[in-house]
Amino acid sequence: MSTYTQILYQIVFSTKDKKPTLLEENQEKLYRYIWGVFKNKKCRLYRINGVEDHLHILTHLHPSIALSDLVKDIKLSSSEFIKKEMIFPKFNGWQVGYGAFTYSFEAKDRLINYIKNQKEHHKKVSFREEYIALLKEHGVEYEERYLL
Image (cartoon, rainbow, N blue to C red):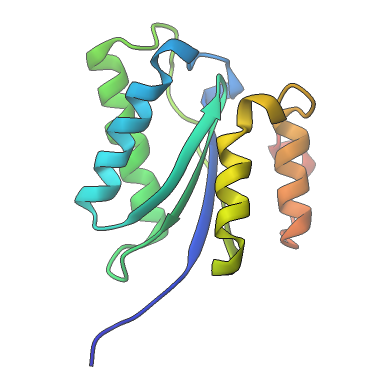
């Protein structure tokens, strides 16, 4: 019997110390690189976008891939890519942790639009406010001191 899954994840993580180092003019290069990581891992990337200090990724993972391993691989390889290509001169790495939230497949289109419109969204809402709202929406307990 084959393995079948449909687990939709929204993955969110920021730059180290939430510094606004992901300059808009080179974000597309980063997103294309990360898309290649997903493709190599046989994961479906529905949407990636962000602003200067964080990324949102909407994906379905291949059943053989562990979420924590994928996020680690994305962070390590994209950090190397950023440094090698020098696309974000002040980039100093990614934050240690990440947020990952599951959704029903019916939420896919809404989430794609939400991620697509990150630049507009963050004209009104800070990353901190957005992240706390996601944690609360999904019933995730957190400690305020770990949210910079």
